[in-house]
Amino acid sequence: MFKKSEMQQVQAYFRKLFSNEDIFLNEGTGKDAPAEVSLGSQFIGVVYKNEDEGETSYDFNMSILPEDLE
Image 1 (cartoon, rainbow, N blue to C red):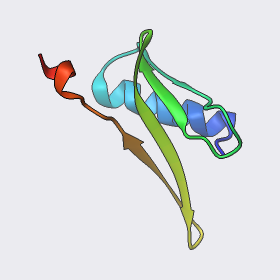
Image 2: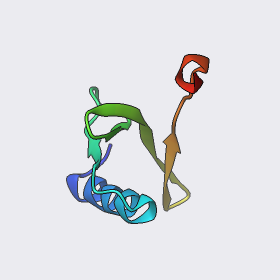
Image 3: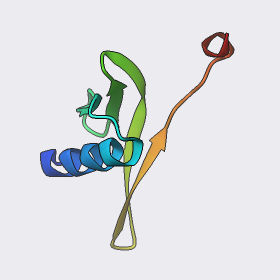
Image 4: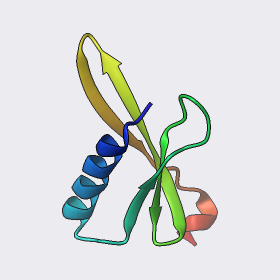
């Protein structure tokens, strides 16, 4: 589960990486739900927190549907 401080750090990273202050991370619903990523009011993906062998990483997943490409 994401701590609020972790969500703020990942959000700051995305904003700096993509030079866009309109990127937001919000808590997902449920105990182990991923954080939800939005660009303005548009949902764009999720971030999963992974803890393995004492190390933490964050995985961003964005699905692109064929109708999104039209």
